[in-house]
Length: 118
Image (cartoon, rainbow, N blue to C red; front, side, top):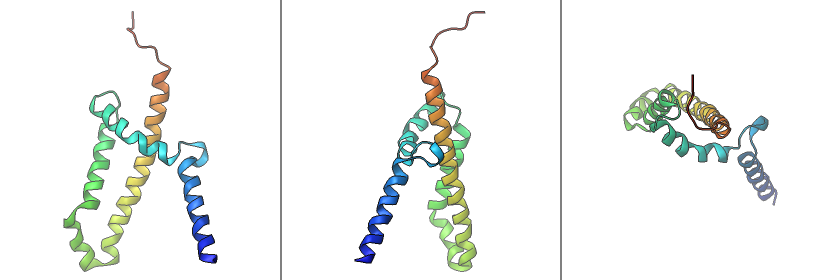
């Protein structure tokens, strides 16, 4: 019974974390749903996230790369530490960049398209 209550409380806390942003920021769900729009706007040249997006893709490839399994077999903890560091950097970068992108989208909605006349 106690395990069930702990598990229920853990899922409830996870649900609250996914639906409400930390410190008033966007929720995790909004950030994740912004990723495809961010990639699309970057590839169209509308959003300036090209280099940051390329670094995130490179970090993902590094983490998912099967070539990186060799150091883990021989170096144990030290081999896993580089992956943990990369995952931490990637998570922070994705959170920061999606927040920046969502702010860019909000500001963009207030701009009236047109031409600047000198």
